[in-house]
Image (tube, rainbow, N blue to C red):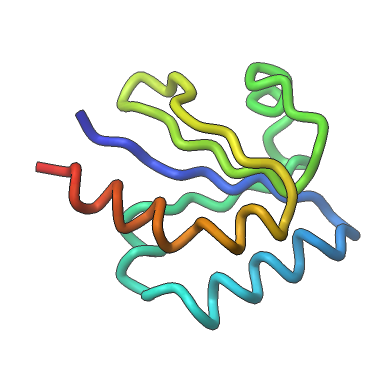
Length: 94
């Protein structure tokens, strides 16, 4: 079962900007390229509604069917755990 992490952000959101900057500076580029998808709230309204997202940034880990496995809301929470989560996805991927 392959999982992906999806980071939902929105325009004019300082915590979103800080989180994206942190990820680009401190998370292995290979982990980002292979296991993280960045999506803007404004460009993916149907997914924002389907996952019932209200706070941004929000990190979702979804399975191969798109079913939510994990949700982390708030930039500080995401920054604290993102590398651990992406490494875990990599290790669980066959």
